[in-house]
Length: 276
Image (cartoon, rainbow, N blue to C red; front, top):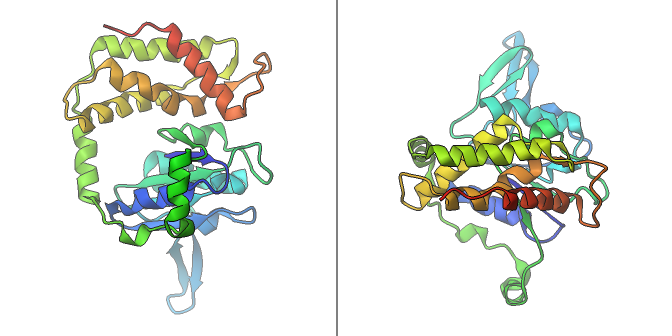
């Protein structure tokens, strides 16, 4: 999950709350411009006692990893998570180490227009199931934030609602949710239109299509159904697809970069008939 928003709107608090809702191991990494891949993955250290190198595991060896302000670090360090997010393992010094399961990455980032940010590479963006954008709170919500101990996070009172075993069981159950062929065709039409759009230089990948398929299955599962409907797919298209595409120079807009991709995907979504 990738959470995007300006500083101070509660991205980190939301990420920590999601992580604490699962009763399993948790690590937080605050990304900075001087971080190295070894700060995330781990490093081999020579042991004088054993007279050999021993691998000291980094914070990535956890069930839930909160990658805070991930676009504050360099692309080299950002890319350290590629293998972990895709294959559930990391390779250091030609040796592969499996990660604990389930393995979930919750990342926060500031808009790319802000100073000191490094845009995430397309290969890494494509590994996030979805991106959600956090804006400023509404009037009543912000009033409540001010009233609640001047904005102090109340995370210590948050109790887990799931265990790691529950998550693995649910992940397996989600794969058994039925998807009608008409919904598969609906997904493919949207995907192909992103690749053919005159406003996009990068369309949705096959992995992106798989992610929407799986997210829709999860939506149906959480709604207590063993089959998908169009309402499981359509609301998820923008959160799942918008961060995977890139606008080109032909697209002119005063919107922010992340909003531009959302608008193009929204236009494509509205042009594809929903199966009945």
